[in-house]
Length: 268
Image 1 (cartoon, rainbow, N blue to C red):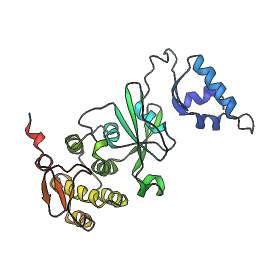
Image 2 (cartoon, rainbow, N blue to C red):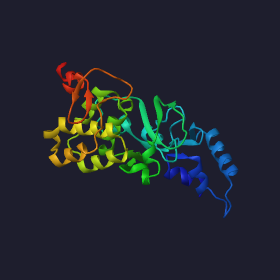
Image 3 (tube, rainbow, N blue to C red):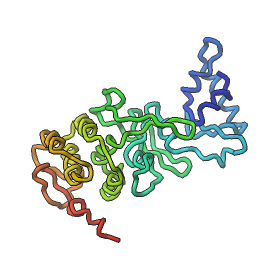
Image 4 (cartoon, rainbow, N blue to C red):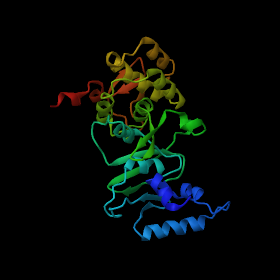
């Protein structure tokens, strides 16, 4: 495929994908592909985002003025990149506050970087999910500005931000964002929570669903399924942070009063 034809169909792309399409007969020559990209970068037709990742510069724009979709970038930084956590909440339009930090899941050793005013933060796929198909599932492929974005579903995102709140923006942001979601497939939420293999995460999901039982139409069977896998002893809501709180006996979970009472809702 000729470079310009490839650029027309891929506004943001990885070098490896371009090289696979840019063949000379039956030969595979990465060096010639790299030289072709370097020529187009020098000509102003391409913007090098970082090593191995490029964006096409539309006609009439320059590398200095082109706006590159951060969610597309996060999906392509690594070959298995998936927009997740608070980044997924923003993508789905459910984040309470907008942030320039875009977490993405990957099994590779990607490093964080800043581009276009956004900070891209790789988060290792949890070990129990690494050998499962599609990183444990709950991943959508969505069209976005002529490209596609791999992003976690709202069901998986609910579990992920409760599992790792530092990537969700903290408890207030997590609660306010999740409360903007009108519906969850609760069986999908529970099935995914079990895949993580973390009893405390299961307890967090159970606590959240019980607290929002009426709004989310949570049934006894949902809570009963989760209750079967709670921790054997009381654990804190957040790993490594023993914030004083109240023990929720049903879940063996110590929950801070500010989360239990949602005190931020009292501030006007």
